[in-house]
Length: 229
Image (cartoon, helix red, strand yellow):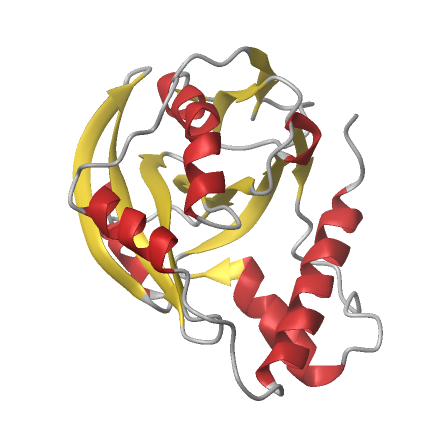
């Protein structure tokens, strides 16, 4: 079931409020040594993404779909796509200026802004594929992706590679991100392509490295079926 764009913003607002609360707390969680070690191995090219077979649950990106985008791609079966409305104001529901700043940081990661969220929860995982889009310009996919990572804190061991799909040539990156607050390191993946309507970044995070790896087949499906809208 596809729901309204406002609820995505409300969920992000809740994340923003939680981040504000956590920032005021003292101390942090213990390191997860096993996850950190496996993440380091993945950055060195030794990770195992597991079974890459996944069924398609439909295509998004075209006009009239859940998320109109400059590109189209398939989402995995049972995953739910929803557009993100970045223009709605006052959605932090009393969280104040600090929460709004955190929300803005979540919705904007130069040079792109959040446009769509594909939720893995209905399929049994904790995480999202998020799609970001920007204004048309002269930057190629590699430059867009490098700027995207520069805007994210705690990034390390980024490894870039080129790929082709559906007539598009893009750049992909596998990297680690470390949360100083939670003292945890996990794997993340992202890819970028450029279109006449502007650049598009597709990003896969996850609650931790295990969740990220479990969702990789859905991300690979998106990459494999990527086309210009």
